Image (cartoon, one colour):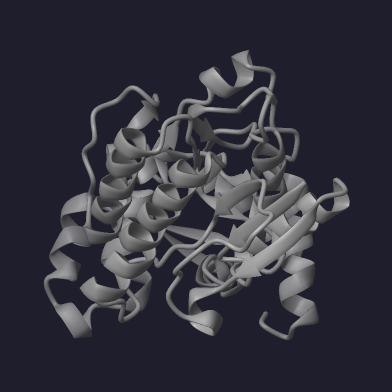
Length: 292
């Protein structure tokens, strides 16, 4: 099968490319950062996988979010519909907001501009690209992930700020489980067509998450519980607020936010990679790159 893959140079895209090629398929790649705006599919394509996306924050503009998260998938969907080609689109559980055990049927409730752009893409694909498969991977990490590096570096310091008691829960997901889910979304397979939350086998509190990372590093860690009202008050200082007490950290680790993966599991897709083992691999990768 000839597969057209967007976002191939991104963290998740690279793992998808490796998995698809290992499964014996040919991959034609496309990267917005390298090749520019998408226009038309190459001839001979049998399947399209869209793993491209622009995260919010870090200087991302509204125009960049719109181009990567809305215009690109909509253009792909248009081409797939015209040529009767299956499309697998990677979205985010954030489209239904920060909630506990959220199912695919939950109402759209995006938290920010990034999530809102993902909502718009989903809506247009569902309306205009019949048979699309939408995967929503939850809190993806693994060797090579630069977005989770600040989390690991914070643990490496030997102390970790907690919002309240640190009991808020999340579902870390190994990037290779995401790549496996993509393979299971190929035409005729168990996740073909529909919307599926993809998540790891463990639901962990923030305290447990940081503790596992510290064990992987062979370091002791001290937790610093910070009452919610203190955390929120600190955020008002803007540039003067300590980096460890960022708004994104409060949103990510201040409340339960993990997706329900029952739908995918009932179809037969069961994630296998534990956070404990992948944390060790991630730590080793960071150290090899001299990032820790």
